[in-house]
Image: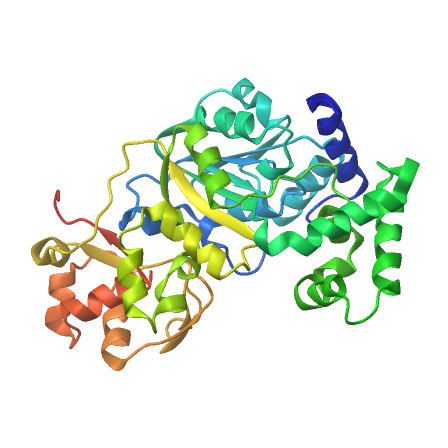
Length: 395
């Protein structure tokens, strides 16, 4: 199919099955995704609180507006723009945001390829689950890159080939059995469900579906998005960085860094860790995914320079900073809280006392003088992304 035919087929899928299929609420959505919170995301990428919160955000391929709604509610000073190829899905997005009071948003029925039609640049671009469905992902990421403001952030989510191997097989099997009904997505869903119902319980595809996807795939919208999509590109580290390099943006880092820690895989073999130190960063990433082929997706941040990063290794600089709590934590004030990634954190008495005094006015030096937490303890809180820092002076 030509690019235009693929785009039309993708739009037809989402007109048939608007995605994501989350229910529409008459109040702000629950919880948070820190990657959609400008304060938390900028802090993760740079080590400090952003200077400006009056920003423009683009939700590129917004679908039914689930992420768009969060972007509006989690960023109360931002103006948000959502674009999508599917007119039917956009109507759901508009209804969703109207219902929950997400009123600082405008929607455009627009392909990512044509994003230059929207004037101005954006400080944060969110593109989740979209580029891998474009007939030309490189053209797509290049179009978005042109709209990213200097010092801005782009968060991207694309599929990984290693962890989706069984999905690829099922996609091809459904397509074969549809014969002349390819493009009839309701038929594709019926065929796929009949296949799963017929295969033996110990079949590899069945086991993988039950282990990872069965709960969400109870909904036809999710099943169709996974198994009967007309266009999908799955990546490995090598092809992923070809995509990133084509954007001419800088790679900031993966937004799930815990997965990319080689110590969790080879920590019992320090001599191998030492050998891995001779590899490039990209080679280490490739090694990790080869050793842990559960990579179903990649999520990462890109930036257009300049983007200054702060490591706070210099004591005087850290002492002069003004700390406040990360907006993406849950359960505080309590010694047992959820961090930005919804992992449980148990605070010590000293950590809890310190965090209670992080009001956005007092400097770390002043708070330390009033508590029992030392700078090493503060750095631990910073590493856990529990604090946002504002430099007390130019560093």
